[in-house]
Image 1 (cartoon, one colour):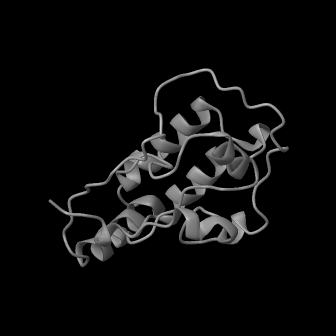
Image 2: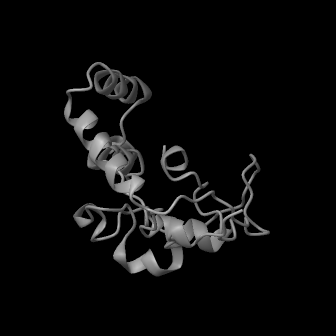
Image 3: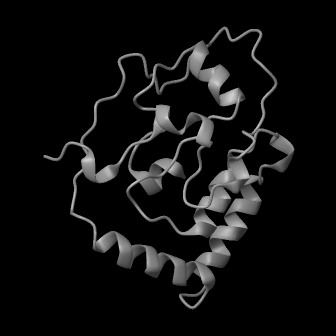
Length: 151
């Protein structure tokens, strides 16, 4: 969901290694910066990224939420999407061009990730309103869409 909204794969600029796995266990989450994202979508993404799998919605629950959202343009999500589009339309037009970290791997592979810490959400995870990341990790993952290279 994050990739669909942002246009970027998560952690594209980081090495996909043991250090990233540890940071994710410690609360690192991708963030949106430079674009407006409807809060209902942000809240759903946060639920899907919860450190506790018991708090993550199941596929049929996500399907039901999306189905409900699509049923009416007069819904809250419709209003939020319209507001976000109005804000995003005032931003400079960009085409995404980015370089993936040489050690960012988006194919299935077996990783030996022993001794990872117990997964947790960062202390400020649910306090964030306009993005998804923890303040603690925000500097290592922040990107500003208008400042990405354009072609």
